[in-house]
Length: 217
Image (cartoon, rainbow, N blue to C red):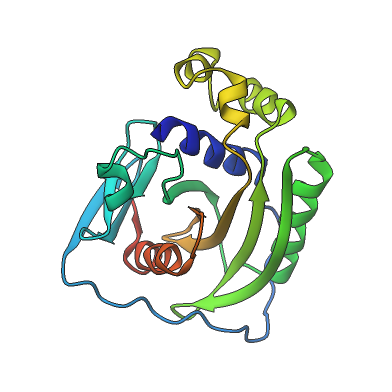
């Protein structure tokens, strides 16, 4: 089951790319610091290390991504295929703070791909931990076009698709909602993407904790 919703998140990472130049920017609305959980664990995968609330989340990198899953749903076997999860991916080197021009470039790049089943609902510059970040909200419905792109760039294979019951099984999951944050961590662009199905509050808290404690090696 976990493969199905993880593949949805891969499509977000597939269509996202960042470019731009640096310039001084005005202040942006700030995201509050995350609450400090009583049971914190660290996880490391593919160069990224971050902390998560071990009472609420489980770490798993078996799909080739730094991923944490909703602990309660995961341990119940994810019966409906809708387990909130968060992925972290390290992108490119970057000097200086992210800017509104970078955000515009990112949104334009995504829109120009004209991929059916993917829409940007909101995007804005914010600050977190004193640094500018790109924040965005998206909706995703897996389609044949999106699956083809993921296969072409190597994000998934036909075997992966067969393992979850084929294309029809993937597309039957329905529409999902995501929160995305692009931030600079140790001179790298880090993209944190969370999928939620009802309430986004816990997902956002976990995303902020990963970024607040994040390190790139």
